[in-house]
Amino acid sequence: MDFQFGIPSEAIFGSGSSKKIGGILEGLNAKKVLCVYDQGVKVAGIVDKVLTYLKVGSIDVIEFDHVLPNPPDTIVDEGAQLAKEENVDAIVAIGGGSAIDAAKAINILLTNPGPIHQYDGLNLVTNPTKPLVAVPTTSGTGSEVTSFTVITDTTELKKMVIGGQHCGANIALLDPDLTIGLPPSVTAATGMDALTHAIEAYVSKAASVPSDVNALKAIELIYNNLEKAYKSGSNIEARTNMLLGSMLAAYAFNSAVLGLVHAIAHPLSVHCGLAHGVANACGLPYVMKYNAEDEKVQKRNKDIAKAMGLNVENLSNAEASEKAIEAVKKLSNALDIPTLEQVGVKREQFNQIAEDALKEIGMLFNPREATKEDVIRLLESAY
Ligand SMILES: NC(=O)c1ccc[n+]([C@@H]2O[C@H](COP(=O)([O-])OP(=O)(O)OC[C@H]3O[C@@H](n4cnc5c(N)ncnc54)[C@H](O)[C@@H]3O)[C@@H](O)[C@H]2O)c1
Ligand SMILES: [Zn+2]
Image 1: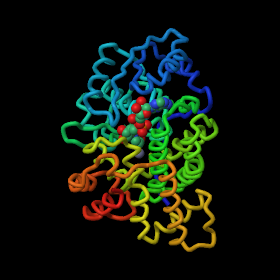
Image 2 (image 1 turned 135 degrees about the vertical axis):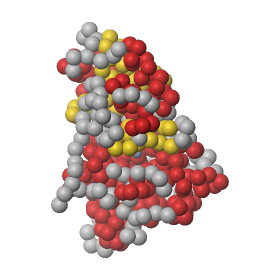
Image 3 (image 1 turned 90 degrees about the horizontal axis):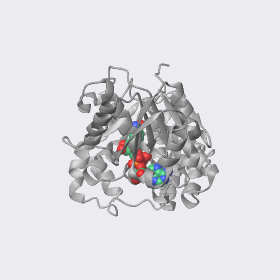
Image 4 (image 1 turned 180 degrees about the vertical axis):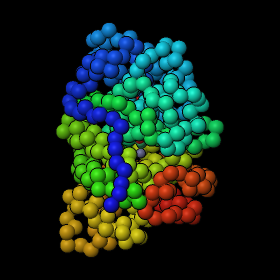
């Protein structure tokens, strides 16, 4: 047995944990911090709340509020320029994966030369970065604990996956209270993204014992709490379990990487503007079905069904796998996940999406090797 497993960030989890941010930054010797967020979290009142906790000490705060979904390289340059002019000595990200990834990329450019594109890939960032504290407000990407940042290359029209050393947050401050006001549709999409992370990590070619343990626990937590969080946003137990589940899913995929669902989701976001979670949610059950033609995947899917709590003990691997796929489909329906047609994808775009999907890193780790025709058929199923 041989594997590589690790997480770049220390996780501090619990209701009210975001109140510790001031003390944490003082502990990191931060005097002036860049706070990175988007308009959605600002309007939700979360930024002001966290800034109140942050300003208890003598820490100066510079705010950068230009983050956009699927963050483009242009805002990374803008944020890095501001951070350099202001000579900040630490960064705080408040928000979903978009804010956290933008903050990570800005941090890279503070101590490494630009442009950011030269770091697309694994372990290409050489200089150590400044302290970064990530405060997630969605229960989806798990970016607060991963060593990846995903940035849209607006020239090449692709999502760069920049990963490895110096790319993570030092401290993840996971406070479920901050996720209470997440709107239902965002709860659904980001939660399905987290479920996709766990499932893709579990069937990945790079899965290992530690990634498996985390993936299965994540599947149990997410499958049994996502609909509750969607239907009743203020259910703090469901919100807590979703934040924990999304974090554990990230523990799994940070080493096991992802697969075909993400490989298709990235070009869907780039060419059709789909939110990351929606793009994954649309494809997940169909890719699961496609992968389940492999008998080894059927066996893995039986474990997934068990983690979900389905009664599959006496079923064959193939039958249990079918139950897991049906359960994911049923969950998608309960969460009102749209079809690709409903979110405005055009059939004429399938060819380009399929070509770009083949170049994605997820293709290397998916348990079945897919062709362009396979991807087009999958897009057709999700239409
Ligand atoms: N770095 C990684 O390891 C990793 C992994 C998976 C995905 N990603 C990336 O993360 C990005 C997606 O992040 P996301 O799915 O978290 O979405 P997001 O960060 O784009 O947020 C979605 C929307 O929800 C709003 N929002 C966030 N929290 C809220 C709250 N508590 N209350 C009200 N509104 C709130 C935001 O303002 C935004 O409008 C994509 O670019 C994706 O590629 C990164
Ligand atoms: Zn994802």
